[in-house]
Amino acid sequence: MGQGIAMDRSYIGGILYKITGNQHAFSLDDPNISYPLYSDTFSITVVGILALAVPAVIIMVLSLLIPTSTITASGHGTRGLSPTKSRLWEWHTGWLGLCLSLAGAFFVVSGLKDIVGKPRPDFLARCNPDLSNISAHLAGGLGLRREGAAVLVRASICQNTDAAVIKDGFAAFPSGHSSFAWAGLLYLSLWLCAKFAIIPPSHRTGHSALTRNGPPAYPLTSRPAAPPLYLLLIATIPVGLALCICATRYSDYMHAGWDIMSATIIGIFFACLSFRWYHTFPSMRLISPTEDGGGWAFPPRSRSHALWVAYGSRGYAENDNISGYEDLELGPVGH
Image (cartoon, rainbow, N blue to C red; front, top):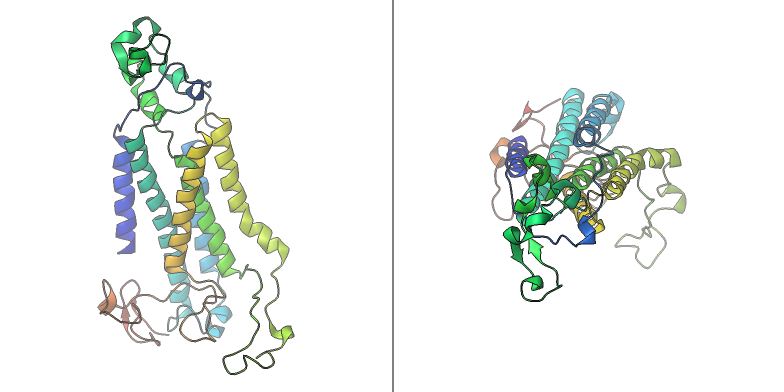
């Protein structure tokens, strides 16, 4: 089910990416679209490799290398699954979240590009406008009524015969490279942080409901310690790469700052949503106050709860002990 929805979003996004959307009227005197035409520092192929292929490989390898001792000793995550199925489930949900994040961002950005049709900063260099026949391509503007004022023209004024270049010239808002980079690379960072417990130490006081006015429920020495800095560095490398990709979209004159910022918000939203949809953080409380997520993926849905649950149900798992039932994705579950 999850794979199908992600594929549908990708397919629809691909259709939106291919069609010719709105082409906003523009002024030949606008300095914001008068920048030179440069090539991409990061091509769309390179961004696809960095934001999709690399995270997919890292998630697969690390999921399959989870030690059996770690799986059997943990009481969280994929309870009731054998070590092999636990590894496969972590891999499966890792890829599901990644695909959902990228497909969601791709779908939204492709649709917005078609609707808005904003010219890129280098549009006039792409267009090569016919300055000898401006009056034939007028779209509006105060210059139609007042001499010396600016006029707006249509894309038909462009003499460049490469339709793909002109079409791409109206795809400034929002930045596809930026949204795709954040959707894939931030998701990878969140995944790494969850699996290796790379989170700030808890600042809870340690008082339980029965000892709220008394001494802490557990001593300071038993509270979580900060993770090693080298793990934090590793987990933030994808974020730094996403920032680098965004910066080049501005330096290559492909987007204005707002185009990149908007795409960043979209990518971050889908990365966080998709990660939270399938995974927990080590400090995330689950059913009981003493149980945390441990960084594992949420348990699989049961076949009886595959598509919906009755109003007021606790969730989509069969019950607290999932051993012995048939899971929708993995089949019969058990040790």
